[in-house]
Structure formats: structure tokens, C-alpha cells
Amino acid sequence: MAFDNILVVCVGNICRSPMAEALLKQRYPDKAIDSAGVGALVGHPADPAALEIMTKQQLDITNHVAKQIDEKLVLKADLIFTMSDSQTKWIEERWPFCRGKTFKLGHWTDNDIADPYRHEITAFETAYQDIVDGLEQWADKIS
Image (cartoon, rainbow, N blue to C red):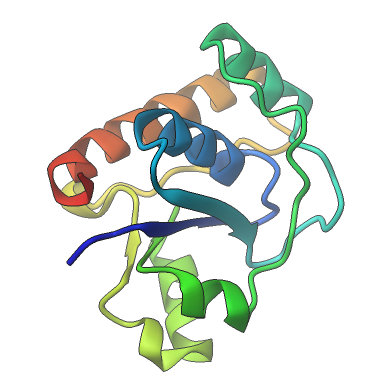
């Protein structure tokens, strides 16, 4: 199974999923990578702390615009990454056909990636590292 379309999901689509989206795009420039939120702050840019962390990694997410997950996005995706079990469940309850292609990023270590929204920069740094670790565990399955 080729995962050519990857969707990354968090709650607001301004912190965790934009960071994960940028990291995936950097690693897999030939794939279609997108992100969305289950309760998106639609139209908002990425959180300033997320911007700061990604800028340090030479990744520019200044053009990110938050959007709400919808059926069109999940239909297109070959693989959907969430940040927690509850987000996976939320998606699978709405779109049962997403079972088997929706996994949390920390699936292999059963690790949820905590939401850093409205927390200090260290929470964003932790989320970033958890995302990097999660993507690493998926590397051999995605490529």
C-alpha cells in the first residue's frame, strides 16, 4: 500500500498538525500532505510558538491556514495521522471507512502528543519532539 496522500489531524490545526505537516513535506516532497483539525480554528495562521520552533528547523509555516476536517479530506487520504486515541475514535465514528487508515502518530509506542496550545514554549518543544519521534517510527512504513 502506497501512502501518497497523508492527512495530519489535531484539534485546532494551528499547533501540532501544521508542525507534523511541514516535517512530512520536508521528508516526502513527492507526496501530497495536508492537515486539518477536528475543532479547527478555521482561517487562523499557525500558533506563534509553532512558527518559532519550525523557523529554528528552517521550516516555514507562515502560510499555514487552519481548516476543519471533512469528508472530502478523509476520502482523499491514504493515511490519517492523529495526535490521540480520542481523535482517531472521533474520525472513525463519523467516517467508519476510515478504520484501518487512521492511526495516532505515536501508535507504535502508544504515545499521545499533548496539545501545547496556550502553554509555554517548552510544551511546544515537547510536542515537536514527540512528532519527530512519531514520524520516525512510521518512516519505514511510509516510504
